[in-house]
Image 1 (cartoon, rainbow, N blue to C red):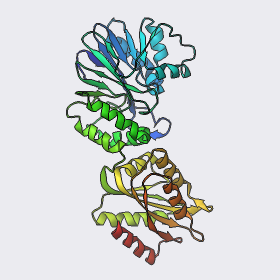
Image 2 (cartoon, rainbow, N blue to C red):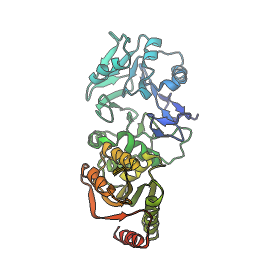
Image 3 (cartoon, helix red, strand yellow):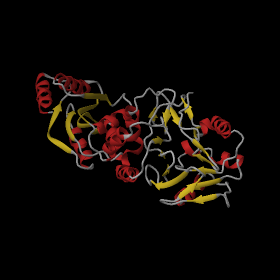
Image 4 (tube, rainbow, N blue to C red):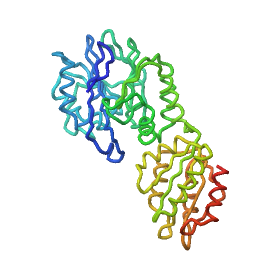
Length: 386
C-alpha cells in the first residue's frame, strides 16, 4: 500500500480493507474501504483515531513503526463508530500512560463499547474551541454533532493547516485503488451515510469556512490537498439538498419485465432527446447507487407494479431509503402497472407526500400488463414533458 504523504511530522497509519464486501453490512464496496488514522509527532505525540477490528493488528504495527520507539501522549477520538474506534481498548492497554481526548458525549458513549475499560485519570474532555498544544503543533477542536453521530468532532492543526475531518469528506474505496476520481464514490458515501444530516453538515461547513485549511484528512478515502474549493462546493450542494446536475433518474420495480420495459423505453427516449439519464432496475441494482442518483439529479421517474394490492417491495424499499436520507426538493413522475386493480401510483404518491418539497406530477401513466401502442404514445408524451 502506498500511504499518503502528509508531512514530516504528520504521518498516515491507516489501513486498506480490500476484502470487505458490505460496508455497514449494507453498502457494496467493490473497491473496499480504507480506515484512516494519523499520528502527529512533536514534543508530545498525538494519535488521531484508531481503526476497524478487521485491521487491528496491521494498525497497531503501523502505529508502532511511526512512533519509532516513542510513546504516544494522546489518543484523539473524533468518532466512536466501530470502524474507527474498535482498537481503543488495545491502544489503552498497550500505552497505559496515554490520555484519551474526546468531548463529553464521547465519554458518555464509550462504555457502550468498552464495558470494563478503566480510564480513571486518563481522559481529557474538550469542548468547542478548546486547544491542545503538542509543541509546534496545536489542535483546535470543533464540535460536529450528527455528522453523523452525536459525539462527532473534528480538529484543526494550525501550523500545517490540516483539518482532521472525521467522516466528513470521506469516500468508499481503498487508498490503493484511488485513481483521482473522488466525487463518484464520495457522493455515494455521503448520500447513504451522512445524507440525512444536511443541516448539521451545513453548520460544520460554516465553521470550516473560518479556518485556513490546506489539507483535509478524513477517516475514509484519500487525503485531500491542493484546491479544496471543489470538495467544499460539492458538500455544500449535497448538504443543502440541491440537485448537482440536470438529469433524470428512472427507477423501475417490475415483476415480469413489462413495467421495466416501459421505464427503459422512456429512458431511451429521453437519451435521444439529449437528456442525461440513469436507469435502475430496483430488483437487481445496488439501491445505494439509485439513492445517489436520486440526490444527484433534479427529476425522477418511478415505475412500479401493484403487488397483492400494495406496492411492489423493491419500490417500497427504495422509497423508504429516500425518506430515511431526507431526500427532498425534486420533481417526480409516476408510471404504474396493474392487470386488474392498479394501486402503485396512489401508493407511491402517498409515500412521496411524506417527504419535503417533492412535486409529483398529477398525470400518472397507467399500464395494464404488457406495453401497448397507446402506452408507447403516452410514454412519448411524458418524455416530451420531461
